Image (cartoon, rainbow, N blue to C red; front, side, top):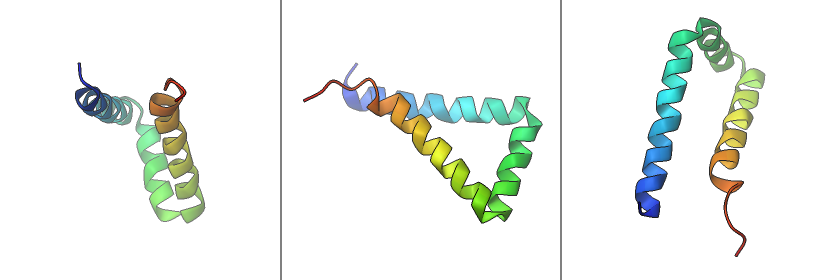
Length: 64
């Protein structure tokens, strides 16, 4: 599998996991709604998403 297809696969997997979590856990949806209203919570949500992206794509990367 080439790197571009792998990256697309990872993005789709993250998207489907988020949708599944929102459908299974209604409090997660209420947290996202609250985060949209309250800017302080929104930045925590952004930081958590950036941390997740770094863990998925950055942590396992080989050093150049």
